[in-house]
Picture 1: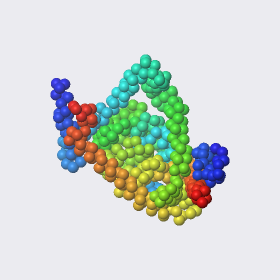
Picture 2 (picture 1 turned 90 degrees about the vertical axis):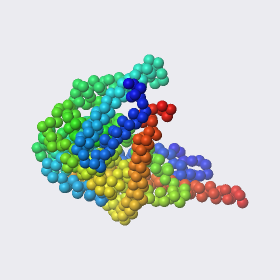
Picture 3 (picture 1 turned 60 degrees about the vertical axis):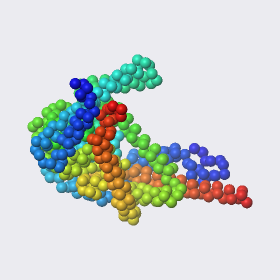
Picture 4 (picture 1 turned 135 degrees about the vertical axis):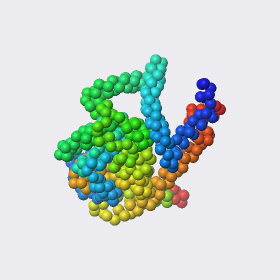
Length: 212
Length: 289
């Protein structure tokens, strides 16, 4: 039985059928197919949720291994596992009040916010030093960036309205074209990848190496 | 930090200034106005007006999916838009279901409800009848897709484990039953919501962080998104339009000064770069003669 389940062709067929169950209802209005598709997606969603539990288990196994071997930075792993257990325990007691609530607002919120806030300084410093008109392309980039930056300052629009149409033009032409190009290329890439998966050319998706 | 001592002088310093000057100046020009807001005027962008117009069309009883695709970090950037949107929805007496896509965000609805408590009390908002907090219901694309096709197949409880049966969510079966999705995002499950709701026809508006604007604009242009509120500035503009100042407008003085400071640093850097390069070239020419 195990050998049958490990059969690569069978796995690809199951994957292809799953794909068709989800894909076809977008084009065919067959109630039975719609119901089967919905059930399959719901099952997938629930199965995927269990991967969180699997990830926690894997972290524990790896973490305990590192702690036992006293590898470099093992105390960070110990701290992580300890907080993981504590937060799990806290959340089971209460999420509206108590320690879980306190940790979220007194520890996670400020740490997460500071982590994000300091990025502004790095980004500003990098932008200030990277925007150098070293050649024609860089000059064009600098000019566009300059106009958009000035426009983005809320005070500018209140007094110097001349920047708005230029900034909006840059955004709705070059910016939008680049955004569309990015989205379309990502989508086409995803479709190509999907076709390769269905054709069995991407065995890594099934956890198989090329040789298998 | 000190000015260069070699022949480059001030021009070399301008071209290669220490990054810590940028940090210091930015800190001062942003924190100062935050502590003592000046209240400088702001302009309102066409995108914010479009977003505001969509909100104005919300009818009493409309079912709004208020999705928080953000962590605490991103919440700070878009909280003005979140709170201002929530104020409008409550005043319109929409029925609101909060769903989140990040573990950190499970407690953010509490912050939002606290911020608009006065409006909710004035409009007699009751948990279950008028609003509900569903918690972490978007862990992955499969969950979003499943919710779009069979909502009660994947969501049966609110975030504290209380059954949602008997609430206004009884009227929700699939993507067609939502009157509006208001998505507040740093990008976690937003593309899933677009794929499984907006592209099928569920009306959707979005308030995103600054770096997402360019990638989300094509969706507005194509009509998939009905409106896009851009970062904190968009939130401030919405606060201005609804006449309810909040964290966004408070931050706009520092926001303007921060932008101007950055522009000044870019100008200094370029003047220094050209001046110093020219100076070096002249020296080479002199030595060659």
